[in-house]
Length: 191
Ligand code: ZN
Image (cartoon, rainbow, N blue to C red; front, top):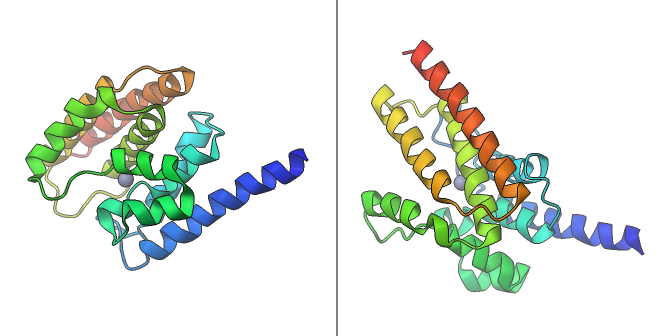
């Protein structure tokens, strides 16, 4: 019985991976290595599991799917039908409204951080960890030192505002701040 339940969870996560990989199939990351886009959501989901120690397949699947609405032709209804209401809602919470100007979208992420649900908070912080790691590991070619510094500052503001729900959130936040220190140091050294 335990084995069957475990396999159902694994299957649900694999279904999310399959869906996300297909939706992002033509996209590449902004960074200088131009990695396949799917590397990013895989890393976010791995951070959720490895650092946050989150075992809920709904949250892990949401991490894998967190960019499909924002960056591909995927709707809330499609996600809801494939993965259920909870996953669809978490993904929507972590989706910026692209009709707004970039500056406003960034401001809203700081403002809304404290109101995110538990799952959306976990995904939001793991996403920011993955993104600040990319600033040193695979930085976008056209980003100046200032722009990178601004990005780090903004990510810090978002993560700081996230609600401290539990130990998983705390561990992810701690890991974010440790990573931030390393990234800032490396950025200074290479500037
Ligand atoms: Zn992301």
